Amino acid sequence: MEKNRILYGATALTVLLFTAWAWGWFDAGQYSDDPVVAELEKRRDENVAKMKDFSPEQLREQRADMRSQMEGLSEEQRMAFFESSMPIFMPMMAKRFEEEYDKLAKMSPEEQRQEMDKRIDEMESRGGPGGPGGRPPIDAMKMNEIRKKMLDWTTPSQRSKFENGMRMMNDRRQERGLPALPPFGGGGF
Image (cartoon, rainbow, N blue to C red):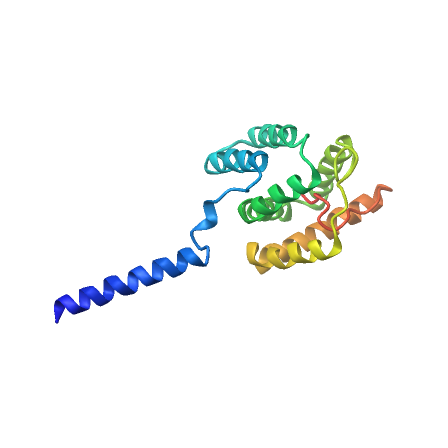
């Protein structure tokens, strides 16, 4: 009787593991078929664990390094890397934004205005919301897919803070005579 239970359990586990493999559940670590994108994905994954301990300056250096590595990529390669990176980076960025938002909320109105002005000045010195040359346009259907996925990567509280933060930043930009940030414009604080 005990042997049968062990045999049934082992068989069920084997079937479950095979099913999970067949459905691609173990492919989370699989890299792109494109060798250039796969190399970027590997570098990204090697650095992700370290990023939580990075200073803001180290994070900026990391972004600049990644940006320079992506310079020769086609738009298809860039989008493939972007899509594979979003489930990793979006929760991290949302958490960081939420922390920055909470700090800002504790400031006086004058301190808030100074902090937003500092962020706006930094953004404008880089060439505006999308950086030099702006961002390439994303297909509307693709953007809707990304928006839907973002619901899984962020909490309702984070989304609320993001929307309010963008409103505050756009209000301040308008006061300064600057155009509003586009949706997903890289703004906020």
